[in-house]
Image 1 (tube, rainbow, N blue to C red):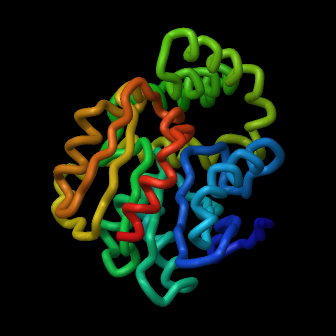
Image 2: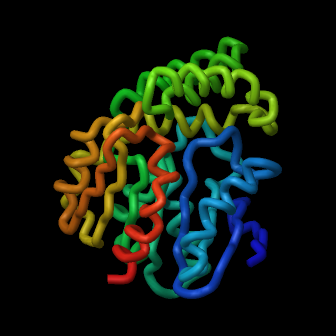
Length: 263
């Protein structure tokens, strides 16, 4: 199974894998809007592969050329425009972390675009992750991007030993993650800092599956539960002993997600 690369309107980099009904993936925070390369590309395609056995999976990054002051609603609008241009029916959407914030806003603002929604390690607002991301943005702006990436990486872990390991990994790998700089990332962090759909959850009528770990460093179990309870047709899958990125490595996750999407 080979992936194809495309660029949608507004410079949205995409990868497509598999065949079947479309499933659109909105990825988490990254340094810029470009398509992943090298190890990151391999990791993203590996995450897509279990879903591509039954679906045409589209990985779609945020638009290029973000202006200062961009909001999550602005990003959702860009995705809505792109999805309407590509597909003539509502599609299933799965958003991870920051991509989940955008996906939730998309479902609230553009119900004609989203058929079913899956949120992976995401909720209607940030929890502890707001401070984590603010600190990372401050480190980047102070000229210390390695400390920023180390802090972000550490917060994705579930336990003390893994947090220490990932802090070191984030520090060492930062040059490879930097891309063309962090201007895009800082704009998205600022947007998500202001993001809170607490008062809009009831507007979301499509079926929603909220997936999280109970040791997530960006969200609390309570936030996951409130998101699932607040939408009109929500379901929660909370995995014990798992952190922010560990959810993606749970063997049963693709089957759980596909079963939700197909029923």
